[in-house]
Every structure is written in C-alpha cells, then in structure tokens.
Image (cartoon, rainbow, N blue to C red; front, top):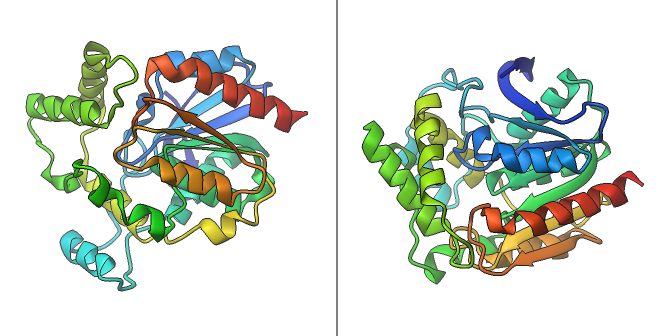
Length: 298
C-alpha cells in the first residue's frame, strides 16, 4: 500500500475505484487500522461511483507512531481528566483532523465526502467544524458529539467496560482471542457474528501492527476533545448520522444527539446493530451513503 507525507507524518493509505469519481475518505475508530474497513465494503462503495480512500490514523497501523511526544504518565493524565482538570496530551483530535486534511492535500483532493466511525466520526466532525469548505458531506457513524450529558451515562447503562489499552494481552494468540471476544461483546444481536472472518481480521491486525502505546495516546485525545455540539449546530454541510440501536460502547443517544445538533442532518438508526459494521447492515448503510453523496454532488 502507498504512503504519503502529510502534516509532518507518514500516512499509509489505500484506494478503490476511479480517481475521477467523487472522493470519500474513510476514517477508522479508536486503535483500529484501516483494514477494519473491509475491502469488500470499500469495493461496493466504489461500485456506486465513489473514489474510496482509507488510511491508518497516526499511532495505528503503518502510519507514523508519535513516539516523540515526550514523557507522560497515562494513568495520572486519565485521573486528572476524569476529575475535570485541563491537561496537556501528546496530541488532540484536531491534530488527527489535520492529518486527514493533509492527506487530501497530498492527493490533490479539494473536497471529499468524509465517513468516520466511532473516534473516526469525532475526527470527521472536527474536520467539518474546522474545514467546512473541504467537505462535500459529513457521515458520522457510531459516534457522538462529546456532549457530557450523553457520554457520561455509558458505564451506568450497560455492563461493557473497555480496558486500559496497555492491559491488552501482548501474546499473539491471547491477543487474537481477546480481540475476537471484544468484537463479540460490541456486536449487536440483530446480525450474524462472522467469527471466522473476524478472527482472520484480528490475526492480520496483530501481524500488521501491534502497538498498544498508540491506543493510549488516541484515548487521551478522545478524552480531552470536549463538547462539539455547539459548533456542530453551526454547520451547513450535508450530513448523515448512522447508529446501531444496540451499541453498548457509544449509546444510540450519541447518534441522535449528533443528528439533532447538525442542521438538516439525516438520521439512520439500524435495529440490532452494535458498535460494529456487520455485513448484513451494509446494504442499508451503502444505500444511505450513496444517497447523500449524490444529493451533495448535485
């Protein structure tokens, strides 16, 4: 896969479709590599007339690792953030949004549809806020606005408890089992859980890049991102919000809040979908993406 220099880092990326078609930039979520955007999913979007670009965020996959961020104590920073203190973190979601814009610049893309999932949805929202003239449309999936009234209730409403990134097993086989189990817990009951396929994804992910230090820094960026809702209310970019009603990590209220915040945003709630992208939900998701892309391009 090709790499490019953008925003002072190296970004690994991949493309599908005709570069003359309207571009759509796919931004993966927390600690995820671009390969979590399934190739078949990307090809189906390309078949709908879109030029699909997926990439590794900083500190994930084969893009740059931000190891020169200086010394910091992850646990102390997390404690301070949770107590409401303002802290200095290695980088922010604004920096990650700048990475995505830098990638567009390097690829000579003036405007793109931007689809982000989970943390990627947060980054896409920041892009729309900071660079509204660079987005053809905003598609926020399985994400939220940072509104504390929404996010504060996550741990109280379900039993799912994400662990500290560095606490994940380092042994290959143990890590793969951990990842498969985590994906099972995040998946909704409304769609088939493709264990063999997802186990393969976990294996490739581990072999391609196992780097939990990056997950810590990404989590810190999320934790200090603040409430985007007041700024989202000022957007004029066409927007689509997609969320599963069985999401145990980011509750569906986060998606509803996002859609209500953005003027004119369309909301697609998928029954039985969790914090994942199950194959059975692809047709509805791809149809909705295609519809907003065509309306925004018109």
